[in-house]
Length: 124
Image (cartoon, rainbow, N blue to C red):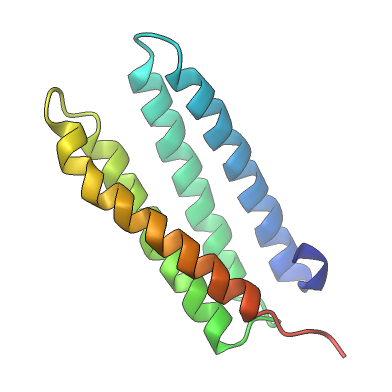
């Protein structure tokens, strides 16, 4: 999909790649015992970088209205993920509070990227 984007979309996709890399590092850090707080900070950092990338992608000229709606869904998913990561820091019952936000983010990410992929206008 990245080869179909304009300069703004290309830069946004690059930012999203970095957010994914930071998220993977945080996920591996989370596997180390007693490093949950560090991993949570990594997740939150990745989500904030992803927010920046998605705001930039929303300005791409090669996304039609459906694609821009998909980006909006992704923005809502990332905000939900940030809330989920913060709630997960609460001892004992934080994971129970975070679970609905995590599920909502999962569904929004799936449908959001589907809309973005369908909304990329092919250059003629």
